[in-house]
Image (cartoon, helix red, strand yellow):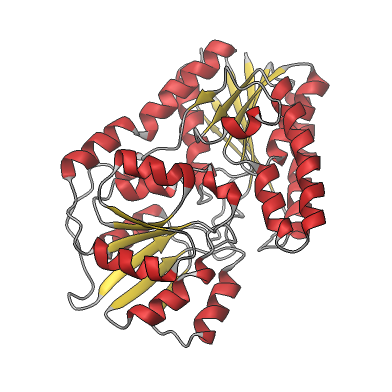
Length: 395
């Protein structure tokens, strides 16, 4: 049996998609026989401009063969991202046809990797599985609607139609958030047999020392680590919060993304000097920053599409046994209330609520027993082991 797995991001790239992809690939390989093959078709590291790591064009690790495609650099902008993906899609399609696999897997947050999977499967007349990590039609239409309502409506109709065909033709679909199926049910898609295998806590963040290496006992460090994009909306909240809360707190942001220039502009406009932005780092260094932090920060922009998502960052933060301040709503907010007690929630974009939550977080007592139970329940290794069994049973 030969399986091809399409994933735009894969380690050494740093992002939620790459971490999920490698965990799934490793578990799938354990369930394969010696004569089976698993081919990963991905890109050379390109997630962040400031994080450049070299990788081989082709790499063989046991039953896994990784094919990496060089794509044009992109920082932001839809046209640039479309050009980058087009190069990946065209070359991936050719590689896959040459491999002539029996089954395809596509993990997708921006839909088009899923579309690539569906088109290739149709050409090869084989079955395929979709791991759905975002609702593209709703996200893109919400973002477009901010500029032009008509454009938002048109984009929603177009991409909803694509999603419907892609998911109805799939052998199976998995979602990372239980908030997703209801949206697609209203679009006339049968989600009865969809599976739910969420993101989880990676091994690197399990059993870490709880010792906090605080930079200064008189200044609290609030850390955000991850993508700086329009979805996170850090520019809409952090500069004003940092200005209002004063010099007793420092915000440390480790990451990059399309909205980074906007965030820096807002920091300058507000004349804020207690926010520091550092480029993305590998996980070993990131853990050092986590240990230096007093409070961990998370925020999603205030648009309807994010009412259904479950950010992967929640799982990473939760394992660190530190107070968390989160601007979330909808399903992710309810998930936190059901599973964790040391998170101070506020409504996305609410500056006053954020300031109050930071003050509240200082008084929160971390429940180690709750942390251990959460990690045990949502271990990435455990989740991917179950997900791989599910996929192999379908094949």
